Image (cartoon, rainbow, N blue to C red):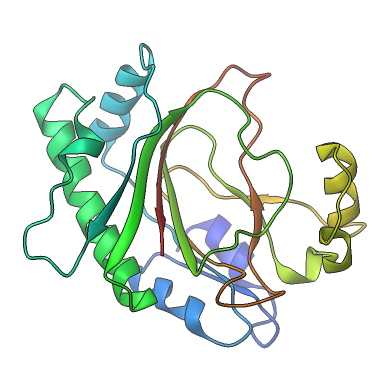
Length: 223
């Protein structure tokens, strides 16, 4: 187990709203009472990271969003991976999408999953927020990954009508003395949304990248 994982795992297990493990089975833990974030910490193949990084140098990819029915034996994922010219990378991404989509479909007990694979060049969601969905799976292949909060760092009362300014809103939502946590590239996050846990959805945001000029490749699956 990595040092970073050990540090996060040291949180009191009885009160933890998140679970992190290097085992894929941890994703199912998000269905437990009081848990709204599960993170599978995985290492991507080096060649995948290199190929995606090279592709991102010239990427101007839009945000295609498609619905996929994971109850079907054959699932056409080509619309999402079409922009990737290298056959080996395209095939790897298709298989990863299939594996993660089936995992979310099983967890959410929902066959149809909305999938989006896109390059991000801007700060998308600057405010800390919880999505009004059942479950959302996010993995970043290259670049800064999703930022998130454990429940005991969230001031829920500040989320009802937050200020328009994201800096002011985030300062109110984040409890004093607490810090925003960030996943790393390769991590798979499953976030419980407000639709399945009213008032307890996982609080998160996209990492700020505009100032640094970084680019991300992000897969988002929604149930």
